[in-house]
Image (cartoon, rainbow, N blue to C red; front, side):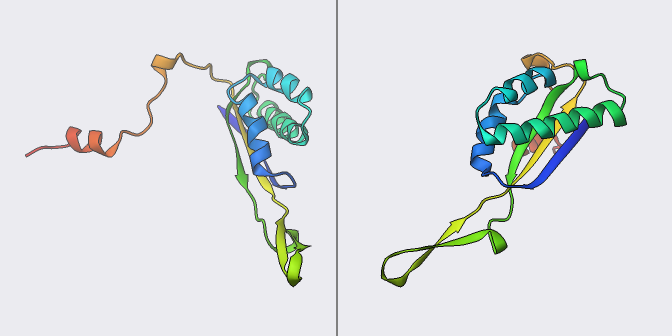
Length: 138
């Protein structure tokens, strides 16, 4: 079973958050939280809050054991970079450059299912070539 948590409109650049997210992808929740507590990055604290929220959702809503949880999927999407978050930097000859204050949407999905060995993992959808060759011929 899976539980998820989403943090939207977080004031951190998606590029910086993805760097931290790659460090915890696939780890167990306790190990990921220990790692995030020691990463000196602002995004690490925010991602830690989302991981804790996903673990709490799993424990309270789905009656899963926190000791068995691992991060199944986690990703960072870019939020809106316009509107009120746009700033102007004056430049030479009366020009103005935009400064984008980037936002992120952070999603973490935890599961209590064990990680299968590499050869036994579920295959994703078959490619178009495989589908057309396995169809009816005639």
